[in-house]
Length: 380
Image (cartoon, rainbow, N blue to C red; front, side):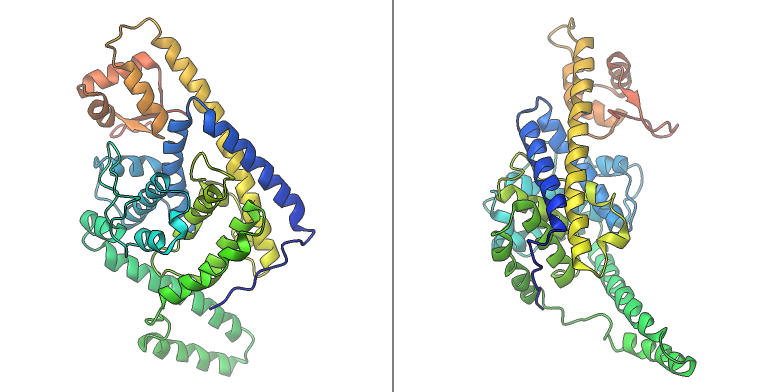
């Protein structure tokens, strides 16, 4: 499995490349020294994890992910929610690790659940479980059937891709040949030929790593786009294809282009039409990925402005409060989560649910859910 690197000097790429480089640089400069950078970084983890599932064709609500991460699920977690939480944990591991860790063999093995605990990711995060556990072990703790579901989903996805290719060829055949070809698809599936049981992840990862040397010689954003395109083309992992989008942020951080945080690449990628992201023309795909980086940066700048304004407004309400007030703790929580519930506030601040409601009322945080059974507040 190989990947042919496209012409990096193609004139069509230059405008998108310049826009991406400029947007990412502005985002990194502001995010690195902004007063709400910590909350911005933590909120981005949740938004990117939910967006990763959206790109894969699944819907996960951010509020459900926040509650699941806090072990306060309103209902039994779905398989999609379990995967989204695996993405969230992987992003946190990348955020804690050294810049070049994710691109090493040890880093990739740890991220895909093969390397166990390493010196880079064995530090627990306050308020969360130990993220040094392998994703596979942690996922099994949450859902005993998670591994089986993930394996089944991966097999179904591969089957759909192969059947789509098969069907496109059938459409050009005569009716009699078409019927025979359709009939032949069933025994192929029964024999396991559609599921590629001999999937060699190590060989495919080696093929992807071979592209790194080429990417390092290009501008950071274009190198990241080529690495992501190579990941889509080579498909190194059967169950964790979403890891490729996280490695975009890790690579940009390694190159120093976005050193303040792990870029939430999926939040911009979800705005790009599927036809462009999955186009047969590689130049079209690279343009789409570069545009996704620009969109991600623009969304990040808007998020920083929104959080800055919200922080100023909330701090004005607590300016004359006593030093023992719980409101400053609530401000920190609201700025670090896309949405907060009464139970989450009560546990984080250390008050009763009734007192949590009073704090929310005093702080003037806007209610976002509008549900009777579940109420949530946050910064829009």
